[in-house]
Image 1 (tube, rainbow, N blue to C red):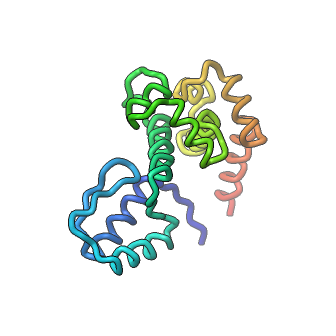
Image 2: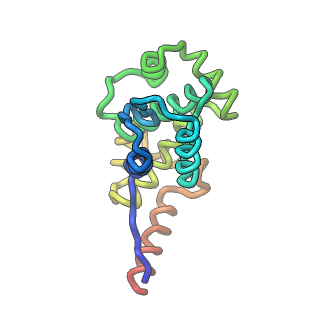
Length: 186
């Protein structure tokens, strides 16, 4: 028997964190995406055990300041791409500067130095991932998707989609539809 499912990575990650922390009897408070505040002092052994238990889920504790900044930048960008209607109508550079309390030039330099890509490229990749998810799950038209992701036109979305995936959005949709059809016939 084959099962198909979808999941929200943020919800899954939070659930894993909560389960692991509660299993280890560690008092905590979930903060922003990617942040937890631990209530009590945790012994070194408990901390190591927590790190090990989270690693098997692909979750790593970041302990250096620049690594933490990189993760905050990524989290803020993902929030913007997935929940744009919750944010004020400002540029991404202004939003990141305000949210992270650093000049945008510093943010971009640190991000590029550690990830070997630009913030702009990371945003494009996240937007295309969201577009793929919207095509698969929400079955929106390309016009609706381009509007939702703040593209100036469907043509611009299509150009970036093909640059990232090697496929046009229409080709991607046909592949998804064909796979659904084959799955339904099994």
